[in-house]
Length: 415
Image 1 (cartoon, rainbow, N blue to C red):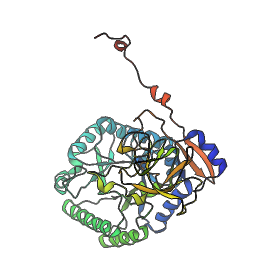
Image 2: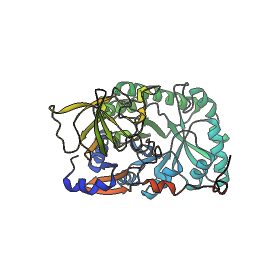
Image 3: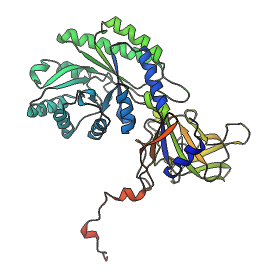
């Protein structure tokens, strides 16, 4: 994406901001649809980026939608999704969310414990409505997400008799995120499909819907190979006789990450202690990558960041190793989350615009927006080379609208 002078002038008053390229989203969906088996449906995971314009884009392309909260349900409705086009996923619903599912008759819900099954059955009875459900399987008992094989064995005994207000439609497995290697993923699916066959024979049932999760990785330096995955999936569907089952594929990052660009203004290019610092108007407030500690496997290496100073050509001469940071005195406010995360960038001056690319997923949604009480980024969509505002900038004054000072604090206290 290259911005014209007119476009830069248009967005200048909205900084910091995100831009999402519609054509890139379209390209990612097209890649999948070219080779996915006919019985496979794509569901967009709203948590990756729940902006209503993004959701509307997915709706226009005929995707289903995976949601995890009431807020995402409301955004989905505004974007044109019908309840029966939604899957309520995520981890462990509250009673109020289960009430929402029953009241609005959301198409599917993935349940991950016997207690959750019991709670939903009780709520569905109150509404006098049967709810379609999936049971989430977790092959590794070290994790709290989903049911173990032992749990499923207990749960499936006379399921329809014990839980008459739940209609068991299928089974769900979501194991990991940011997957780049196809072979282990297909190996995991092979294991999952074998478990399905075992359960169907043991309990004399058929899972009409098989949700295989997703988690396809997409970054600047590498991307999950969809053609190779489709070959492997087709082989497994034939092997296990699942060609007539409905296969659900949940994807977020793969569909939206490459489309996103985060643009901020540069405050200073500073040299201190032999280090070049590029100081910007906000990293952690509007863009956040997980710190490389206990979650190191989710940390994006330096070479996964594609960035530049707008208007500067990428040439080797005049390029410096730079530490890019925001205004907070914290290691969290550094791109790369590490004092050794240097990037080769041209020397910049105050007022230049800095761009981070491939950040359409989990950029603004993971950000520490209230830290420092600074503006929350605006969002634009690029369509036919025109920029359309899809979320206005939230100014610091706006953040005060929902705060209150109680009466007992309105008088000064004397100690």
